Length: 395
Image (cartoon, rainbow, N blue to C red; front, side):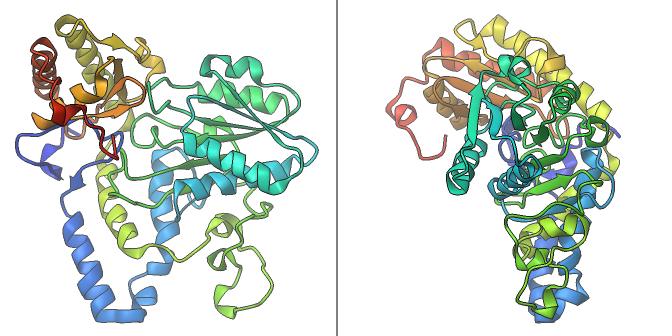
């Protein structure tokens, strides 16, 4: 593997893309693959495509590809639906596993949708469950013997702060709690070992570091020894043991297949499957080392050239994911000015400028170039313009 692999992506000319932690760029070959799926498979095969082109098997086939990246064994990951639904599936299953416990622990660095889904599920159940939300630094001390589930995002979407998966899972299990990890900012960014962690569940999305495209399907992992005993709360047709028997009673499919819900998004899945091919050539250890080099160079250059910014991410790379965040009171406007000059990052309220570092298509020249433009924007107050101050719907 030689990094970067810029020739494997269709990046706009003159753009330095530091937002792969939010939406990965278009890998070469994906557009052609979608074209074939539309014209040759959908157009030429019509409904025969479910068998002839293997559409029905896609969720498990692509799931195994994702599984290799997150250290999960074959047959333990399945694709489909959105990350919100996968969170709901994992949490509902976890609560069923601990029927005599009523508390769920998370932290305020978790992505809000995970907390929303937990709140909604708790309201729907009406069994007196409680969601406890603490600061990330307080998680370990908050793991107590009354917990049913610990549900955390490994890498904080705002700051990049990274939880110790092995240590937290071990403590959760020591008190008898079920462990759920959200890998949205981990899969394809940092080495993950689901087997080694022994966690019961993991979920994640594929449109960030895995470059599956906007709306790419989410994944769910279930520890293999549990897969045949989970009772899915979302008992969908394609999670049935024999969907084409059209029985009126639900019987869950064996293993991870029971975590399927609805019809797989074939076109999105085809794009993801093509995008995932690059991971056959990637060593996650080497990728992580390159990510840390780029991130640390960025931090050093920003702190030298942009004194008005305050580092929001951990300085220690060992506890930081593949992103760097800085706080700036006018962060939104500054980011818009930066984007207008061809350096794309993003903003998270209230004051965080967020930059992702993906060594597949970034190098040191990109980092230095991005910081030079950022320094000019701050030095000359180029952000202080009406077009940059007006908030857009997506930040």
